[in-house]
Image 1 (cartoon, rainbow, N blue to C red):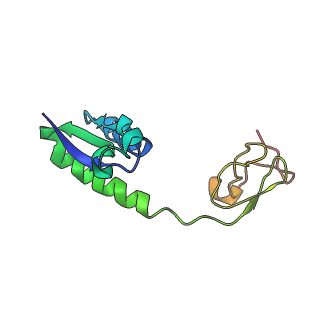
Image 2 (image 1 turned 120 degrees about the horizontal axis):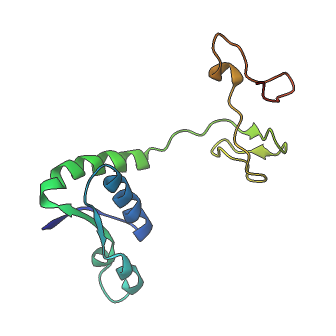
Image 3 (image 1 turned 90 degrees about the vertical axis):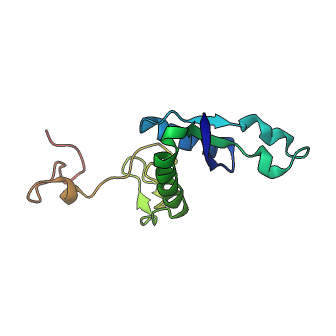
Length: 128
């Protein structure tokens, strides 16, 4: 028998958690995801998608759900704005890829190196 371990705000939210639980070895299922379209005909509470796992996995799944929910409520602080190394656009610190060209944020070369040796030349090209 399946037991409800999470009541989601949306089908997308339910499927994100289901994927997380499945990746951790739980037999998770989303129920009621199509009920969102009929919220004007049934009480909202009954139209929310839910995530279910087998009874014998419910206690362990609830621990994961609690950690997952807490992590989603407290997102990491965004970093400072950065300049794209490929196209020069200024990108807000919450993003790790340039909105204009898709290039990734450049890491501080000192962080990636051993004993401060950089793997890039002064002009930014990769050294081999």
